[in-house]
Image 1 (cartoon, rainbow, N blue to C red):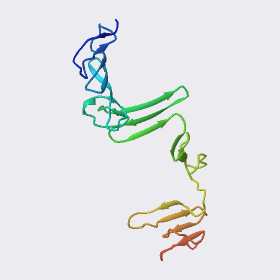
Image 2 (spheres, rainbow, N blue to C red):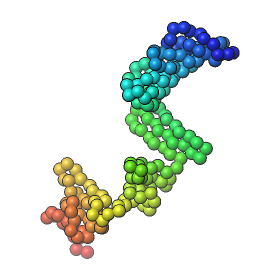
Image 3 (cartoon, one colour):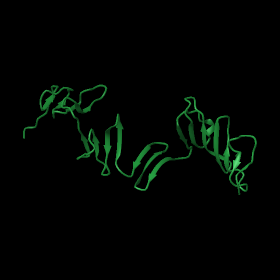
Image 4 (tube, rainbow, N blue to C red):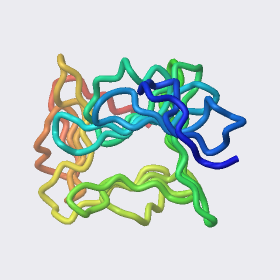
Length: 193
């Protein structure tokens, strides 16, 4: 069982080079010019190709010849669920996609960041921090400025349902509360108790 040249005609299902002459449909092939394929049991599972951007694209999955993406990494699986798993000894991160949802699963905290700053933080207890990585409630919103709207509820027909500012003001019916509680509108109910 040594490496050897098997097929002279390049194809995505016929390896040009095989590590074991007793397994002639498993090895390295070429689907086309500037492409390299890894083939197992006559099925292409990985393709490295030149992309339109000049950066090589790595395609993993099934029916790779139908993928026109120029992404650096493109994973395709037509089965019920597809998983991308990044694992190390201290935990794992999994992205799973099925017909109706996408799940992000982490062995630890989950952080969404932009500009090198964590914007949303989900801890192991299920507490969410927005603007903080130490949430002390189920939803904890923090801002470094008092002038900011921390929370805003709106609909297209009612853009000012509820506003909570960084200075602790609550506005109902207004996006700019002028007091600790500012209610706009004529229908306010206060019970006589």
